[in-house]
Length: 251
Image (cartoon, rainbow, N blue to C red):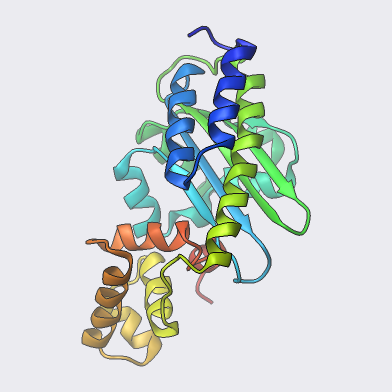
């Protein structure tokens, strides 16, 4: 498939607009990522206001990086997310120092991302006033430059994928299909997502370590997952947690 052909782009847009599930949207984005000569993609979306409708996250980032990102609470240092709060137009990761003040944590985060195989990226910030905000990133893993002929196609597809995801997410939440966590399960999971141990979470919540463990195990059963990392990902994906909660620094 030649990069940037309008009929190829339209084929991907049709596929993403008619995708019946979020998983199918992720599969379309994965195929388009390869066709556009990128190696990885990520779609992050925040819906609604407050905590009523949580974020969506679709990506094929390396598993080791995702586990590190969630397990160690690294998202708070992600300059790409911060730049998207200031931008309405796409940008290459290499231009981040020109877009925002970069401190040592930001530089360390990007160095760790490069070491994990996320070398450079092209991010499309998307903001739907009063309804949704987020981004779609297309990422290269090697030393090759960003594929310039693919950038207009990537931006076009990103907007359609974001809108298709927003509509599916709203429909799913309104239909009540997503598993629901109890407040205590959420409290424990928020701290786990920040990298807190079961013992530390218990101290912060006034619970025993065993009780925190039971809450997290019950939450895993509700989502049908076997690990804490999978639980955090699913809870973010289904809107049970928000990135604001996960990224918030302890006072």
